[in-house]
Length: 158
Image 1 (cartoon, rainbow, N blue to C red):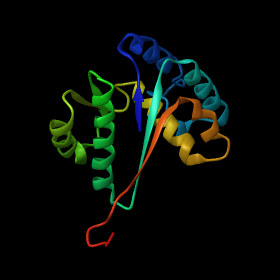
Image 2 (cartoon, rainbow, N blue to C red):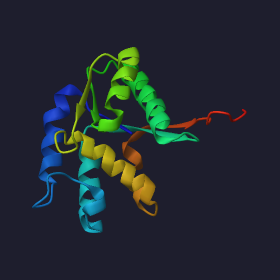
Image 3 (tube, rainbow, N blue to C red):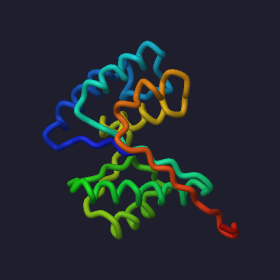
């Protein structure tokens, strides 16, 4: 999942996302919100100048799927002439992420989930898509592209 925000809009989007953090929390995390809070976040997201690209990888174990997803996001970033890609830090994957980035995209930063409010947007959209029911439809206007990538496990025949 990638969330795209133009540089001039970063301050606005970060400010709105920070304003949505529930009291006593450090970030917006849909798993920990009530349905009412989730609905409020989605309504606010729909007002913001942003869009998302969804990348769904099937048939690969997590580390390989993450690599395929990152390559897809980096290709999108390159095509859009993005200045930087921010990835939520996943320590076991950090070095592999950076190796993929070196071959695919210039400026990549790893930040922890509470350090970059725009990461919360991707988390919210992903939660809505996974949850089903009314939630996928509620975030559909934010999705610019939805990529399905079918992977192959080693040893499988095409």
